[in-house]
Length: 118
Image (cartoon, rainbow, N blue to C red; front, side, top):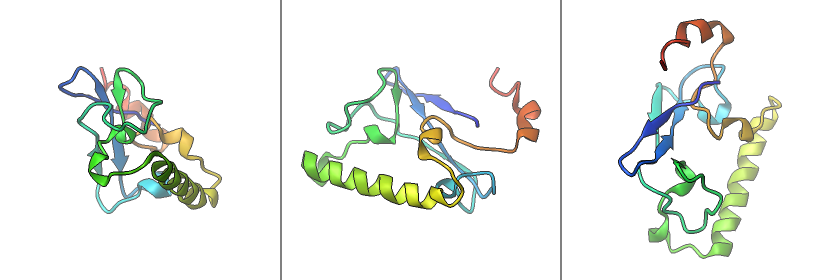
């Protein structure tokens, strides 16, 4: 598992999500092309209170334009988690493994990637 953090202008790092057409990727992260996606803002979601001080995630995205009440936000979050669990359940996978992981690759590529972050 490879995590990617991108420094953004507000002094935080954005925990980047990777998408790719690899069988090693969780089904919820498979896409026709390799790409990185990250939230470049701050802790802008008033409903998400479990944020890390120096790291932002998609859960920090500003949702004020949606005019969600806290109960509606919680309901949508619960439904999203349930759907994700269903999608990952066939393989005995778990979404909690990917909170700070961009890519899940074959272990054989670890040596080639070892010095990439240095």
